[in-house]
Image (cartoon, rainbow, N blue to C red; front, side):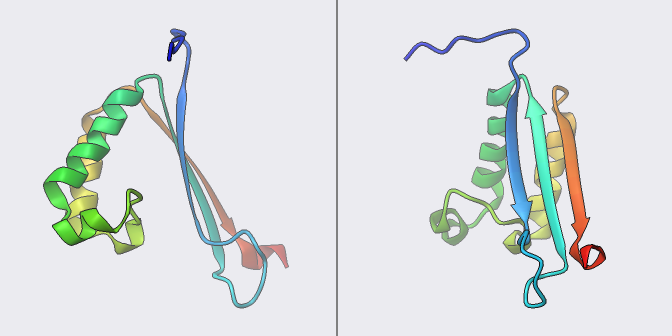
Length: 102
């Protein structure tokens, strides 16, 4: 497949935590984070290296998705240290305290 690359093309990696439903049985927060970059491969390499170098075999076999709440401090430190070396990205965060919406 031919992939057309524009010099201004951006890739967005989005993840969320919590439910957007406002209900007493749900957690009080909803958080959404987006990382944007024009260099998708470098960002994917950061994640691939973190998974390969830090995760145990059991953790690697669970899923392709990594849950930060289940990740070790060592994994998070490694990932953010490598991410800080990566120059071409921006991080956006939306933090919602659902208790204030009632």
